[in-house]
Image: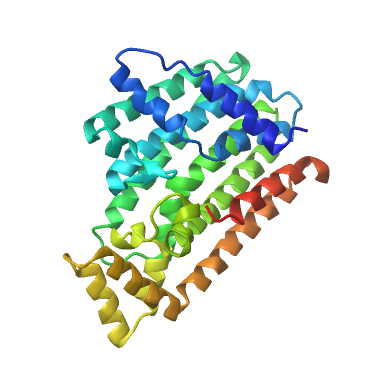
Length: 324
């Protein structure tokens, strides 16, 4: 079995070898910039690991794993534009460093490069990989649209939010697990369990990301804390606060949400104070634990010895018990 570090090295090496020395330089320079900015490479590692639990031949999952990471980075470029985010992985976002038009076009090119990489996969798996990859790509777009729709809606339920997260974030992790399992020749039953493992882990992961955005350390998290609060994003934290707040506290919260000229730092501090008073952070942690536990239940039903799936358990723990 390969270790996390082994698989991470394989992913990094593969990304370094992606052909980006193309013309015009202005199109590909932002892509090189983003890919060289680091990142945990969780998605390609999960893909390779999902293959490795079923097969010792991880090489046949390398190209699909890289394709998924390239696609993920494409979504980051466009998401940062839509969110108005100026920092990613501790440095300027692509649209901040260049401009919005350049970022859009470089993102488009990166998605094409992702498909180029997928096309290099072992031909015996292409017919199974392509539908999964396409499904993931479309679901991510659907989830992003729902996320934007929520910005215009006054009331969102927790169930609606989870559905959005399932599409926007969890779909990609479940796709990594499914594609890796396909390359490992997993049975249909185990493939479905891997898919569910990725789905539930992905939901827990996004909830954890939301929690860190409000309660994390910006020096460790890699981006400014409170970005979701400033943008009035309908995260589970805000949805829960709006449901629990009453009287003056609800008026104060709505005041922060509707203020157009308030100092961002004051808004962040005020909303966080309400979150703490309502124990929104605790409610979020409970929901994270629910989906994290579900992911482990799926994993432990897979027809493999414990020592084969333990690497995925370790990775899941690494993802969830993080501060960045």
